[in-house]
Image 1 (tube, rainbow over the protein chains, first blue to last red):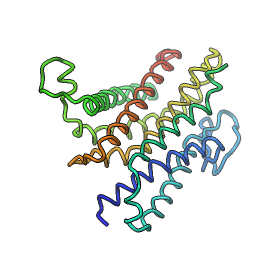
Image 2: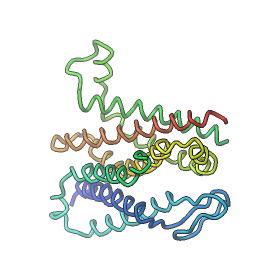
Image 3: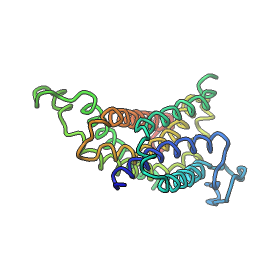
Image 4: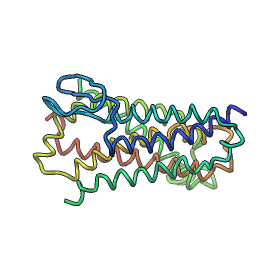
Length: 112
Length: 154
């Protein structure tokens, strides 16, 4: 397995899993942690706002990063003959679908 | 401090916008002959040479944006709610989510622009660049408009 080919598969898997995991985390609020900016506090998991807004964005990114890292770890164990069949277009097709999904989730802001 | 970071965020975004636009136009509509008109010169850049700069600028711009984001949530979002601007809030929410999707694209984008360019990945390269360019343009315009709604230094 060449390093170049291996990185190609991992980059595609990262793009797909990170984008999908982020959308899922945002949709279902699977934040790894919550940041309370007024209090400058970080709490593990999802916490309700207290004394100001609660920010989940950083936590969603962290959740997605863990999912993508795990997927890449698993993919690196799969034989090269399987991963090299991966279509490079998945790297843009799935993230593009995620953009539409995110826009759909937030449609309420624009349809009031 | 936040105002200074906001200006730095904006300046980085301008550089990023310029780089990705050059690359996207050059990838989708490369110049067939050198120089000539302004448009031809704009298209005739060596697209691959922008890749590393775009990756670094994207990450740095996003990090600075992430640093100033809490200030937006504390001070600006309430103003948008008072102004009854749900579209502006929605556009900004999309900005934060689109930025993350752009981050997910970066390793693949970087890989498919590596020299020597692989012909079999030409379409993937072009679409990844267009997608990244769309995200960067969206985020730049939304950030600019939302900042104007609030008013600089208000």
